[in-house]
Length: 252
Length: 263
Image 1 (spheres, each protein chain N blue to C red):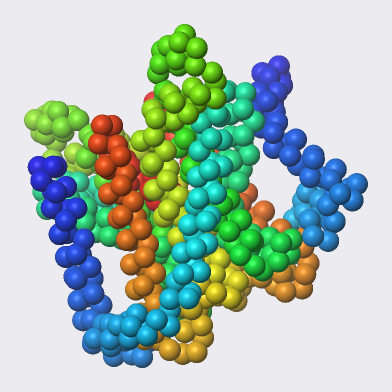
Image 2: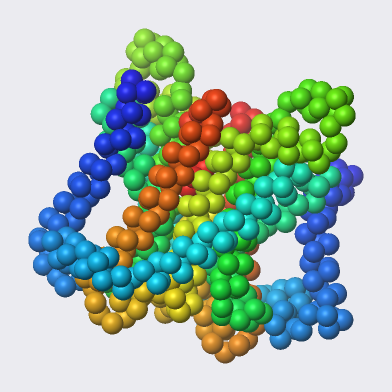
């Protein structure tokens, strides 16, 4: 109990500036310094968020966005780790992968979105593909550089002890590269959240991003903040979950 | 091995990659035969005419102008903020949670809200760019300033160097390699946020031109503009990498610099 109180105090100390900022914002709106039509109070946004989370229409938008996000992330992270570790295992891999990374990773991937719309229609598919090509790079790069940075003596001793090449990848390379890979996964998750939302704003139809566009057309400022806060909190929560996994792994 | 593949990679390999990708595209387009996927042999002539006619240049210019103004303001604000927070734990405790909470927010999605406050002009768009590019700049400047050897600060103090002078004469140069990595990230995501906000609020710029072509059913032109924007993103990063490597030949090269560039 005492420990819980202590960590709560620590938590407050660590994030007091956010509390302060939200309080100032609330006061500014309450006292009419900022007009609430243009800038709704944080409490009003929080209330609207809670209300919308009980609304079937909003929940269906949220479900669509989550479906697109998670499908894209699973493909991007799984594929990225597979390609990254695979390429690090052979002599040819780096020669093929490094130039490809140099050309493709700095490209603004969202510019290919119109092409995906043309080829895949206006449904979920083009948004999932956009999430994949945007989120794959941090996962791939982390896996590739993580696997290349492994002390080769570890692999030699495992191989000398009779471990097969294939088993070695799973028992030695992957565990050693995992902390770095999880850092890549964290970046991939946040990029995925941002990109799926933006894809729904650029070509509206449904999903959380579309909810923002609808609210903007109706000048409902509070409703504009709700989807934005939802996707940001989702990003923070998923990121925090990976950090927790990462810290247990490092302790081990 | 690594040095050789690097030298090969920096000069020729990207060109080979681009040629192979364009050839794959051509093959796919010829196999599918759909007006939604025109072959490169149709796109490239349209691209040539587009660049020759100058039709795209006003939009290209307005995109680049906003991007560079946004980056400039971001550098001027972000680097000092990051350096100070790297040397002052109290300031870091204040600013880090705010930046961490702002990090997962889709910044281009703020466009409709910012427009309510400041109108649909350049000010709103540049504000979004500044907010976006400042995050990696502050973060990397902070990391760089934190890693400065304390003994250097003490010696500067001992010879009577004031705190502001210390920040610019001691902390800034030692943090430079890290700051330049932050700048690279800022350029990459700066291009993304500039184009994306132009796609959301369609008035001027390459993002607007792209979706206008798409809406008018000019698919070949759409693909030509996609190539222009992709090339712009690559060339800006490539040019800055040359500058960055020149400026930091003395610093140990970081293997994970590319990982950071995608964040």
